[in-house]
Length: 352
Image (tube, rainbow, N blue to C red):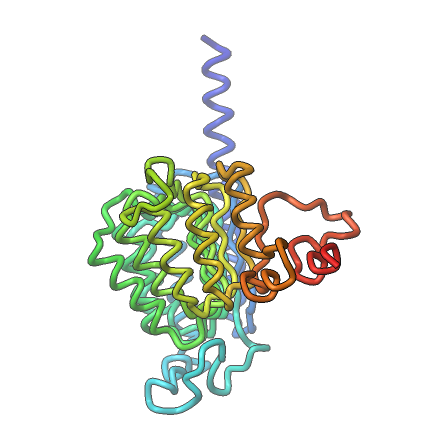
């Protein structure tokens, strides 16, 4: 009984320590902002999630948001979106205006609870920052709250290049309509080129997955790893109403997307067989990550033949993809041939 009580006390003490450690991080950033110092890295993290029902937690966020607002006013950030007024270049991947890339901020919230009350503090002030990178991982905002916040952020912020959202599942009630708003905001954003939506249980709804793929077709990088995207029940490789068909049809239309990660899902041979047909029509995709799925040798062979049909020299030229590197397994960092795996030159060299 005493051992159990001691363990509970130790656990409570550790959790309290995590929250106090975070509050110190937040206080330091608040002090810097209040002094008018330029801060380019806002990195908030903890080793584990902690309860966030303590009033001091919310008070610290309110003070921080107020400091952000004062800093925005001092720097004129409330007027920074010049392309809303017709200024600047609308091309994707460009940070506009006098706020150069050197002044761009990077924000990370890793294992930091962001309930609705905290999001309400950040909603008016965070989009006005010159942020190039935003990472949100395991933040205890579920479904509707988080998606609404991100949709509004993307509509107001014009400088973001990279958005990373991990381990914030959509199980909390984000509707198809709300996801549609989020996808529209991603697609319409003038500078966003890198999207990571990992471990969000996106495989649970085919319509949502389709919307995300279409919204991100002009991105350089899209990460949909660890989303329980499952093709086990897709049936035959010729099936048209399935996850396999939807992803393969999407890639077969040759969207401008450069890099796609589908690692650690539940993709099977039936997916790989349809993917092989799509790759023969896709010349924009440069890298496709398929590590830690359920693709067997039959599926891998079909994909490799689509990359490099080595049956004849004519097949190498006319029936091969030539552009996409498919990564099925982890390549050791010390492997001297690491950069050659999957490259067209190495395959043609072997054939010759």
